Image (tube, rainbow, N blue to C red; front, side, top):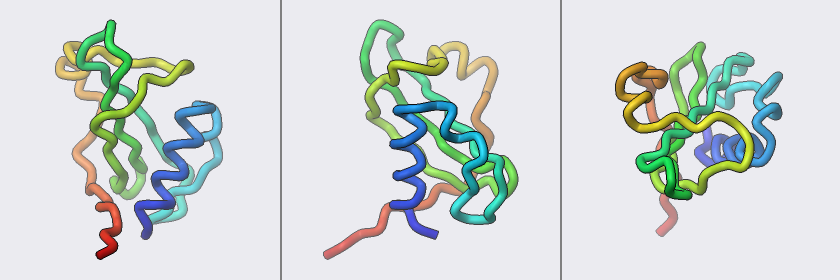
Length: 97
């Protein structure tokens, strides 16, 4: 489907993490969306984020996001050790000439 749909879900979940509950995947329609934030430096305000569907394993990745005010942020070391993000298929942004 559309990267923009995924991005809209991400932006809403960034503001209100509880908004993922009951949201349907833009790819398969299942209610199995997951969002994880990983900070490279815990004192920094930047994070990487992964938003994916646990059912179809499609989603998006945000590489230079802003740390959310609410919700858990993983440290890079913990994320490397625990591997909380599965290998999923990335939905690419639409390119407009």
